[in-house]
Length: 297
Length: 292
Image (cartoon, rainbow over all chains, first blue to last red; front, top):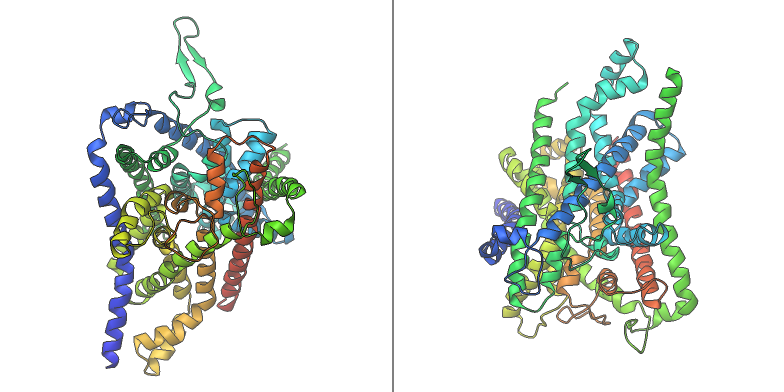
């Protein structure tokens, strides 16, 4: 009798665990069945259109790439820097405590609130308008807590003896960090950063809030153009200030239309987005797994 | 020279860390600034007691209650799904699962957690809603039930993984002591592991509620954007987050009352999630103290 109760419980908890995975499988099968037929080279290289059969995802794809690269460029140095400060420099005092509570809280602030911050601060107060730059800065603030927390965790796994050995050889604090501690912690930091980028690429709400467009048929200005005369190459930052759209917004736009044809487009775009985010997540999970196995000090 | 260089780097790193403080100040500053502007035009009593929210209509009402009940309704449904499933799967993973199963299941759950919310929205609207409609004929095409269920699945990995961490932290000696007294595995789980991990589990639940309250795209896509003071899960409703998106999609110039409403709504949302996050943080810290 006792045994039966236990068995029922195990079966129940196993079922609960499998529920999530079952859901994941159904979701992927459903989307692939809806959208796979629409996927083609043309779909990837055409601009969105009023006619579902002609529409493609070129501008959202390029927009997403712009946003992700810029967000990575902004958030990686600042996030890692903040992590290093909190783990290696900060004393145990009230101010440090305040920063810690604050970061924990920021990690839980809904993404749409970051959108309102971006709208009030970057779009209006700094007059950056509804540009690629506003979007990337907003997402930078959104993912910073993730990068800071994973940097700290990675730094914590580096044993103190490594630092002491480095100090004993006469290295300064910064030399110790940059030559010993940081390389050892790098896989952990990269894992966190990749997860943060996967989050940034899938975010929709904050970018809609800052006013990213839902229909756009041109690309941001390319940063490098080759010319016929000396010096043969021109750099331009104009792209930063151009309007943009991203893949999740395009999906949202298609889902909210009444015509069935756009649902197929949405499903096809979701396949592209999922391939991308699942690849990023798997890479991060794999990195962490490898790292956990290998690093035994 | 070397000391100057070292000092400059220390300062630079310090500035990176303080950026987080400025982010918070920025959020609160922007929200307060526009919310104050909003309350110059709308009385706070109307805001809290009026039962209609129609800022986009000719006859404007500014009662936040319909948006709050909408948010509350969807979050409750989500928690009703995520709580039992998350807790059970955490128990399974931490107490029963063989190592191999854990190694496969945990990454899959992480992938589930990493799927963009707009994808869940698509799934709620075009798969779950039609499915539910075949069981519940009276259900509207847009409703609170379907996005609620899907949102529950979305936050399931978070509930599961945080609760599992809490259970894992319960000292081994406590469990072994119970086994030595002749307790069954189930008895150890219900009498030692869960009570021992309780504050950690509650902290995970609160964090999950905060996540559900702030979730945006699933409800924007699948729940219908009709603010309505109801607890009926079968009719269209609107949440705070969905309202903010709805206004942002239109061309609303700064300074208009419609523009200010999204900040007032955002402020309400921010206060709720802030309280939830702080309580969760406090419980987590307390839990850490217990087993030091």
